[in-house]
Length: 639
Image 1 (cartoon, helix red, strand yellow):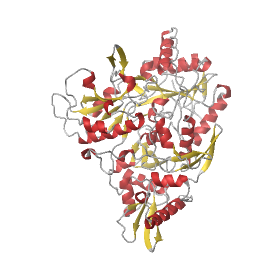
Image 2 (cartoon, one colour):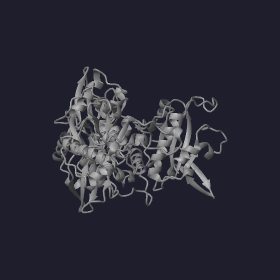
Image 3 (cartoon, one colour):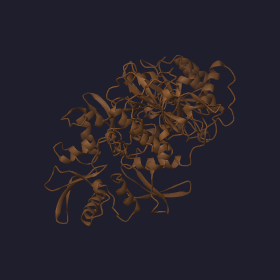
């Protein structure tokens, strides 16, 4: 049967169904050429049940999304008065970032919003009845079991509690299974509902919004946008322009410039996020999509791209982002310098040595008077081009200079949350803040985020220094980053409060693509948190907050231990036929990537050198599945 008509922008159906009407609707629904394979569960937080006003609220939500520039939204709202239809289910919605799906990758998800706030209480009453009907009937219609169909918003963005910390997958799955079997759902064991939201969660959200809003014409931060989720996961810093659209060779693309890169996707493949730097591959094309995106990126910074300029060639190669202002000249101590401020750094040279490009961050901690005068003059001009004023005696500016967090996005100002007033100033790679009036106690959003398991915003993780082991030191230009696999693997459980104290290494024969396909299969019962290819590429398949099914149980002193709950699993690519072939090939790039990843894990979990364990030793095998791996050098990364 044809779907109901839509209205407004983004196009919403804005029609309420009863449970009986929903069953009839979904049973005969025509999804078109591509059928959804996931349902992502959310809670609205606001509006909640007491403020819900039916169609009036739906249209208010629609206007909110339109103000954010969204072209779609979630598909369904389970409300106190009924089941409300928003984005048609035959279309890819915008609700879960990389969890939205992609036509190009052949999958997409249905977004279900439960009206209410469920960080501390479970959903109940009519909202839960309507939610159960939506999930149960979609499971029946798509012929996908609840445990394979239903995921959570927080699976795709690790700074969100959504659909609420009180809601666990086991509870949801068992409730939907009982609905389908027309049976009584199991009782929740004491202590099995989730942990209340951290006190810092709202501060993180607020600081992200402040960092995201200044260059985006009010679009701000949206955890549901694939661009924003990708930018956080890959430490790209703050957006330097709004999400916009362009057409090249008859194809329509969305793009958004960030401090370290420009993201883009072909419309409507919202979840298939790509980077301009990878498209360019280190070159500057004369035309085509890459050049069009490059020109648009520079235009966002108010300066046209000049392919023959040394500053622009250098900035593209070093991923310094869009310019903050135009190229100009200054005189310091009788010497004339050319300079141009970019998001990540300011470039300069001594006139007329145009090709001798230097970075301002390289003299950020200088102490000799002549260099300090040059540095402070360049900082003054950088801040001026960014529309702010440099104050060398301000704690924010001293720390920004020390930490090299790029150009300021706005002047410092104050924000009050939960009766606490914060001073803050957003920069291209981080947001600095303090509790008023503790002006000198400067804190970073990236540090706060790290404490709660979020990616480290804007940190140059790809060029994090490694200690000793000279042969394992990465090149100066980095090259290490983490690619989030979408859809992620679902072979995991909960950690139930247990801390990570072990890293288990697995040798997995076969090509990376084959391993990813096997681990993300709906029926997979083995998956690791990370997979590292022999080429040094790192893939994340499961969020670290989850207990990936990779290590099983062990016994010690007569006690059984669930190793999954206390470990991070890392799979290492090996050639097909390994270990019989015995020749793993060149493992240098993989080893350097592994060492880099171990340093990141150590920063989060404070691991001991003995935390690294090879799976074959746990399994009681003598097979040297990871022979050739320099364990001593790897353990040194955790010392």
